[in-house]
Length: 410
Image 1: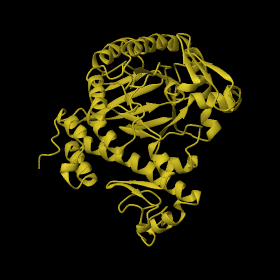
Image 2: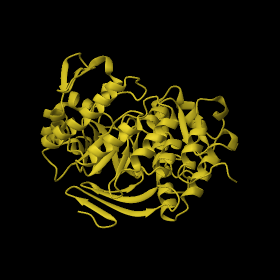
Image 3: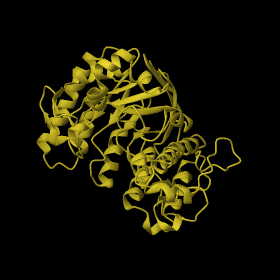
Image 4: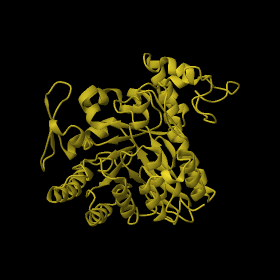
């Protein structure tokens, strides 16, 4: 059911709040079984049902209302029997908000040495003990039904976008459509869990468009653009996102999978995407790196040894907010530097900061769209990141020009 601004399905409501008058950017409200989510959004990745270094309460305090779990990993451990016994992943991890589960398809790429793909499904060797595991569309749905995720992803046949094998790419795209049909048939809880389709087709825009048409005919409550962030040139990435969003319905959420660099998020929002996830902000924190509006800071560098300022001035995260404000930890760069090479506390603090940064970047983008000043927001974002405009990445300049923003124009 849809009005001119709202789409409703049994377990999801999507309300379009505002559009940018220049680009394709949109602000919307996604209502899921475990609460509302403001879009656009970055979703932190809690692969094993925990965000490395943060408690569920700390994650909640960042404003996160939708995070990721991984079906493949949870299916191996703790396993379906434990998930059924406890009543799903929300209860298992003490998380009262929404969860999106990846189907396990991405592991075809990341664990390809362990995987063999046929029409039946994917045969894996467990990275835990080497035992064989068959992941079929039906088994992926069964696992995700046990997990109880608010958004489930179809099992898709994923190929790295840089693969030169056009015939294999077409086979993967067409198989993903067939596997979606099997997922829809096997999904036991459509009234409480949303199944999203995943558009495949590599870097071939015509194949992507063909896949869009096939997937849209299945009428899932949300749509993902998959198979990107696999080493392709950023120009090609932007062309795929733009080609897909052009064909997608206005009143359904659009999820670009595996995207996390701040520039990628901002450009993808301008191209009309709503949802993003990536392990990068949390992984880079464990290497001692802080994301800021002026770029990534390596806190292990000696220059921070006697720097008693916050990780980032003006940041509202518990690490950075002024000491007189409620909830402030009063963390200094010197403290993070001191611990970055030897103590896990630095990784915890930087994870908290980096997740806050990503979520807040999307909050700012959303507010700018609502106030119809998104192009100015984008220019300010790139100006902070690259003080010298001649250093702007050409892929971003070209992609944004395609949707009406001239970054170089003063």
